[in-house]
Image: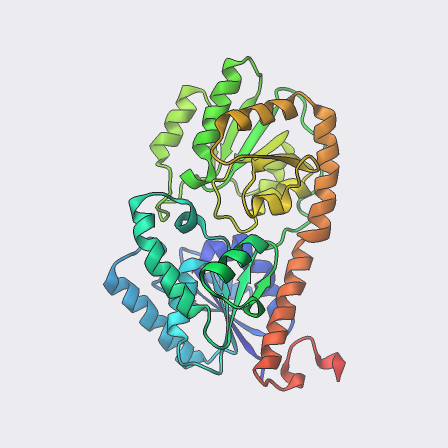
Length: 391
C-alpha cells in the first residue's frame, strides 16, 4: 500500500501559492496525498490534481472557543479515520490544532512547519501580547512530543525555539523557503522610463507598508523621480490587515500606486526596477524576495531573520534597520541613482536563488525528510517512495 501523506493547510489558496510543488512531487513519488484545508472555491482544482480533499472548518481569523473545539475534534476524527503515515502541518494554527488532534496517535509521524512566527512574534498590540504567553506554552508542550519533527525556514528561528521552547536541535529541520520555479521567474532587462519601486506582499502592517509609504513621500519631497507601487490585497483574516480604505487613501494622496492582488508575479517583476520589503520581522524566508532575486532585480529589505537569509548586504541587495523610514528612503535613493550597482546585484541574486532556493532544491529536501520519517516509523523499505532502487 502507498504511504499516506496528509497536508494540513489553513486555506486552499496557500496550497497553490506555497505547497503545490511539494504535493505534486509526493504524489509522483508514490504517496497518497490528502489535502485538509478550508475550501474557498478550489475544490475541483485540488481533485483534478489527483489529491484527495477533506474540507475543514478551520479558520485563521476565528477565536471562538466553540469553533476552535469543533476544528480540533474534526481533525482528530480525520486522523483516526484516515490513519496517515505522515501529517504535515503548515503554519501556526494548523501546528497548534493539528498537534493537539494528533495526541495519542503514536504510529503517525508529525511535521510541524512554522513558516515564520509573524504577527505573534512582532506585533506589540494588546491582542498579540495576550496570546503570546499561552501559545508559547502550548508550543513548548506540543513541539516536544515523540514522533514530532519541527520544520523551519531559517536558523535564527531554530535558535529561538531551542532557547525559549526547549526544543531539541535533533527535532528541527531547516529548509529555506517553499521554493520558486526558476523557469518561470527569469531575468529580464530593466524597463526604461521612470523607475518603479515595488513592494509585493499581503497588505499587512507588519510587512512595513507604512514605512514604505513614508519613504516614498520623503523621496518625492527630495525631488526623486520614481513610481512607488504596492502589489497585493488586504487580508481580512489577519489581525495585522491594513484596511482597504487606507490603501485607497494612500493611492488618492499620490504617495503610492496600489495595484491590488496580482496573479502573474513573474510579469510584474519585468515592469519594475527595485523590489522592496521593509518587513518588521517574523518571516520564514519571504517567497517574494526569492522570486525577485530569480527575476534579476535588486532588493531593499530589512535586516531581520528570513529577509537576510536571501539578501546578502551589498551583494544582491541592501539591508536596512527595521522600522527606520529614513534609512529605507536613503537606500532606495542610492539604488535608483546607480543602475550599474543594480545590474551587478541582479546577476548575483539570480545565482543565489538558483543554487539555494529553487523549487527543485526545496522539493528534494522535503521528500528526503518524508523518507527519513517513514524509515523511523518502521515502514518496510520496499514501501518507502524513492527507495526501491536501493534494494
